[in-house]
Length: 183
Image (cartoon, rainbow, N blue to C red; front, side, top):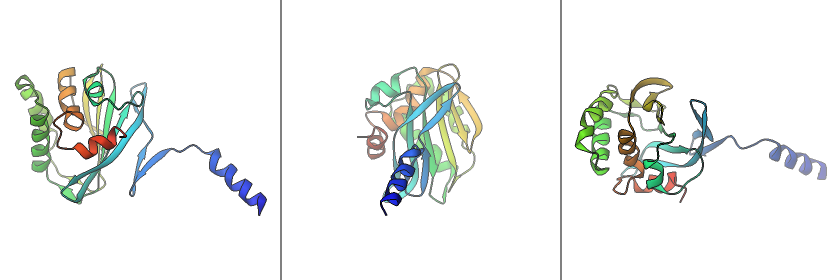
């Protein structure tokens, strides 16, 4: 029996933890942005009333709990959204983005970029879809849906507006923000 316990402990500590499980969703501990590796900062659920819509995870160069420093910095970061609700229409996605930009006080000068961003959402988000919003200072803010690049918008100001949707002072996603900041 003693040998079994020792073997079990050796086995348990021989393999690093490689993911975070949020319900049945497995979120990787790291993601790559070009040649840069980002680490999982925190994750939680985006809920609408009581319905879980997606598991959201924030990835940074290094762990950080300062929301403003994160969304305002000109450095790589990513948010992964793993949809669990059966379907969210393109119209509802765009309305949610617009509400988020409004709450983030996005500058009027960003409206052409916001319109371009909204044009990326022309079909519903289905259960199992994975949306990755990735900022790379040399490229801009890119949207990937199920690992396919949908589009990129250049500029630090747009990056700040889009990531403030989750991390801004006036976010409608306060509970998710706290989980992403690992608070």
